[in-house]
Image 1 (cartoon, rainbow, N blue to C red):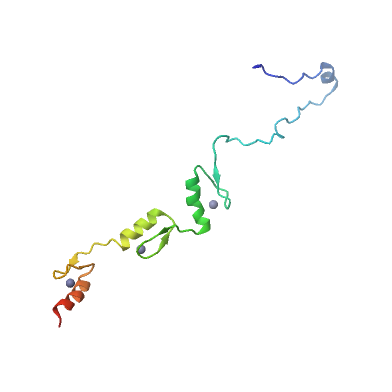
Image 2: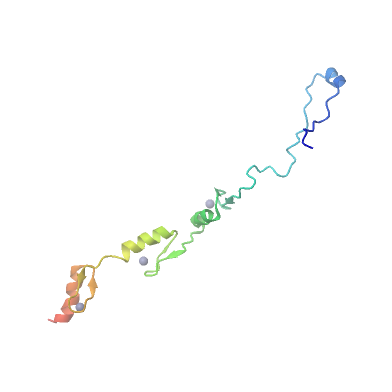
Length: 125
Ligand SMILES: [Zn+2]
Ligand SMILES: [Zn+2]
Ligand SMILES: [Zn+2]
């Protein structure tokens, strides 16, 4: 083992007799395994046939086709495809600073108008 196995050499007589170049049979085309990236599993989207290196990135991609929005806001139930979108939404909509504080009951309000409206309940008309 270890040596290179050569196909049997064409007979010299045939070479001299024939003008046509002898073509060797295409030995590799019948092999079932013609994938080149062996050992590197790829995850292919079965809708658009894009390849992804990891299962995670394929799953994130496939939400484009399925319309799946797995990240749901716990406050308003709005759903998002990606966690970052949910976090951005939450930051904008639900974690506003409430700088106006009622000095009677310590309730907090986003706008001064809300505080004033609330405050009237304490002081009455
Ligand atoms: Zn796809
Ligand atoms: Zn929300
Ligand atoms: Zn109050």
